[in-house]
Image 1 (cartoon, rainbow, N blue to C red):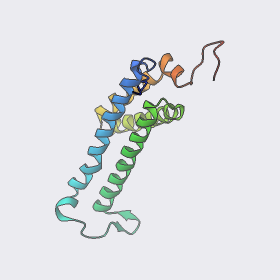
Image 2 (cartoon, helix red, strand yellow; image 1 turned 90 degrees about the vertical axis):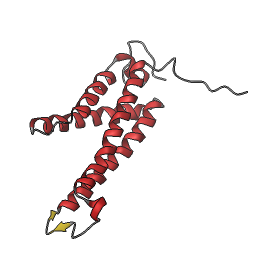
Image 3 (cartoon, rainbow, N blue to C red; image 1 turned 60 degrees about the vertical axis):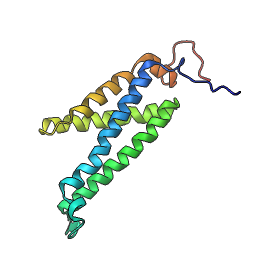
Length: 150
């Protein structure tokens, strides 16, 4: 029979921790997809009235836009998670940029009295784990002196 080789022996524990943090963020973003729609009463009453008045979004329009943005972030997070578990270099770069932006937005929300502690904690764990030397080496971000990049 054919045996599947697994990269568990090569994959640092930090990669697994990051993968779990991404999954937790996916669940939070998935909740954030539905929360504005429930708050605006779209599931109960349906779409009643315009989504835009002049140049401004109505309450329903804002809820739909917010849900669409979080749905996009959720799907993007799953794509990055798959690439990250396959140890693709691009996923490390995307995740680092994503984490920096998300942490900045979370900190701004904290100062405006709307903190999301789960996202802040996950982003902090991801940022620290991504910057470990063994994680950077496995994604070919960091090289030791004399090491070849093949």
